[in-house]
Length: 163
Image (tube, rainbow, N blue to C red):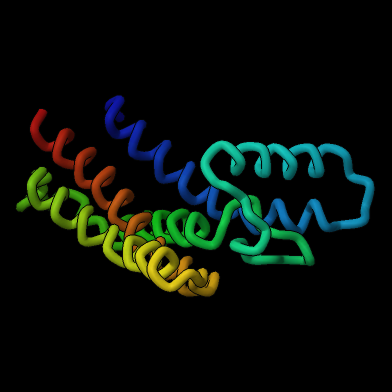
């Protein structure tokens, strides 16, 4: 496996692991058992979440009475990436290489289109002064995650085919 293939595999495993860690961390933190190692690991997920997210409890889904380690929008982004990885793995064409090259201009356009729902929720918030619901914010984030995962996969496949 090439370095690019390893990077794509690492991205895929990371996307799936992070998407699973988000709700799992809330459940572990909320648990009353005294298991120190899982609690430390769950706390580490919250610390990592603080690096990438504002973690406002009112803008986060709750599970087991705990806010998730990232807000609803970030949850949507990470869930979108994980879903895309699963979908691309399920429908990978294996040896077929027709039209594998990543068209950078096309990827940029798709990336900008993926931002539209999130930009719309921000415009809503700034113009109206109310925050869209968490499900709306999560749904707006999904296309960003899907698009980022698609770009990573297509880039890796394009690079692998050009060698």
